[in-house]
Amino acid sequence: LSELFGSKPAYADTVNPTKITPLTEEELKKDFNEVWPFIRINEGFKGFPYKDSNCLDTAGTGHLMDLKNLEADPLIDFSDENKRNAYLDLSKRIEKEICSVGPDGRLGTNIIADKQKERFNELTKYPINEAVDRENGLKFFRKRIPQIQQALAIQNPAREWQDLAPEEKKVLIDILYNPGKNTPVFNYQEQKTYWPNLFDAIAKKDYPRAIENVSRNGVGKERTDRLKELLKSLIPPEQ
Image (cartoon, rainbow, N blue to C red):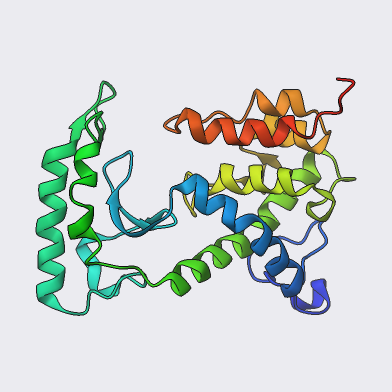
């Protein structure tokens, strides 16, 4: 791939290079520094573990914790066995207090999630490493931006990631950040994106239609409204 790309781009090993102009590491970090603060806000960043809306143990900027392998968690130092066991016990107690099975049969945090706040003093005993949280975010950008570029190229080859307004970049990164790092974005074999209406609308600068396609299942109204406001700001006054 390095031969196809020429000089090594930020993500030469993560994407089929068809019809995209790769970012340099400098360009990638510039975009990251511009977009990351917004993602942290929308993800509800916390400097310690908490239960997310699906009652999963999460920390930092949406980092999903593996309770079966806490000692390997890069975000929190769980090298001490007593510390690991204490956290697992706390996690179970919080789950009993605030988690319940919803109408869809899935476990989630219920309306009395304020009870979790009562445990924040205990949870802050497990601080995250913010440098690692930031590095995880950068890795996410490094993987996802070329996938976004591929999806845009299918809808409108004339528009590339580098041409997008900061607001558009924030919307697309947030859309992909919420479902997790392994959720597919682009099907290379079928040459299609999994969010065709949203990508098509943004590729064509059809922001009213983009606004109609930013809602996601399981995502709160407040988070979705922030994306809608970003897109509304791009609509020319005459529209």
